[in-house]
Length: 503
Image (cartoon, rainbow, N blue to C red; front, side):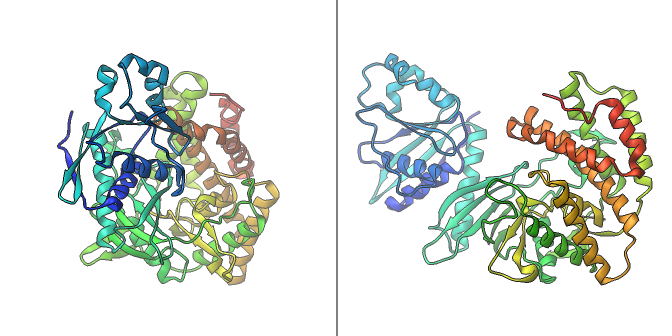
């Protein structure tokens, strides 16, 4: 379906370049942008800005492809710039690899009418029209593509309202959810982060008429981030300052805490930084937290509990996704019932154990190392919107068995020891009970992650997560080695969950 066209006034060349950046933040592999306009309308200026934004290189040489007909660039998304003005016949497109160009990348096509029937019907149309001293861009395309572009343009509008309308936008990262992040730069100012967190789209019901996200208490709006950020900062924890917010649309302009993490250049854990992160965590667990947080006048966010249903629906991802992937067939009812029974028995042992503000993903991607600072201020914390009220042991398991980095056993032990030493210094702690809870939460988390990483590969087309599976299986073996988990360990061994498997 064709959505209503979007029109953008372009008062000068700088505005045309900003539109190129805004389009660069929205394009996806497979997109074809048909650039229409008279000579001098700004098509090449728009294309050049888009390519430079994808390359994150404002000085990248982007010559006009008038004579070569096509120029290709290996950017974040491969991009191919066509100028078909000199094309004799559409059959010549075969020699240019026209269809291959947009199979796995983005194609920008000037003079697209010369492509004739070879231009995909799904192509986005970007028409540049002279208007007074400037231009007007008219963009049209499918509902899905126009939704992406419309959101990117809304983000530019949000920046304008925050006084950053002329900022340069560059893709920073996306995560396993629909959230994405950009670095925005404005002359004379420190870089900031533009957070794009659209309201969560709930999936179909999976149990008791409820969707997975509702049972697992996944954050539904950006209000969750704002709320957790507020209580962390009030506790003098280094979380980003929020400079501007649009709670309805899910846009935040926040502080850029830095780009250095807790891993070295080879992505190995730096033991001293993991120890520092454990000590910060221990101090956070030693204080009370408010779970009823005012986000804005009249808007209150209640931090959900990490209850039994949430723990089980997460653990079920192993049988929902991992088991079918490695066995070639769905898990049957008998296996599911036995799996649930083992987990319920184990979870009974830690019912109500040491509830705290549980950040849920306290691990290397979300920890920023600030070497110039001292004490706990050396660590910045991000990506905490899915926080729950749950066991203290969970976040330590998330850190010490980091899903995104291979933590050697000695570093894991040093991390756990540092946490417990800090807890002991603050008062009595039942270490035996804590270590049992730590092992169980590690087993729960890594069972969940085995399923999630397969789901990201099979359902969401993100194969890069599969490479982490051997590490996650190793973490599961470590966790299940605790004597209290012997029955579950035996069950996992019996079912082959811990075996090295290829997908």
